Length: 149
Image (cartoon, rainbow, N blue to C red; front, top):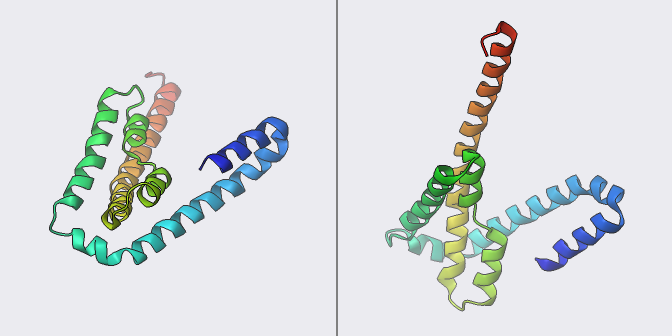
């Protein structure tokens, strides 16, 4: 994780124009790599993931994501951003810790399950917040035009 971060920071400092031009492509590559990692980790750990059903682990992961969103939403200035930022788990870091530091198969399975639950819970919330933000912008624009704001 640190090597790509360090290379990106050095590129931005020494070659800012090139870094800016490459940033969208590198972001897309990172996103695809993360999706491939989660997909194959899910497939390879499917028996352990299936074993999680009925244990309460999936409920715990759902409560973790929902609770983290609620806490961030309630205490933040920009509620939506803080809620989503608080609830979004660092899948890459958790995967590294689960594979390198913890010698138990169920740990990686739980990371994958929590990541998938996070996506399932947070994507609809983000879409809802985006729609509401767009509506507020248009309401503000309309009130400026009509002189009611």
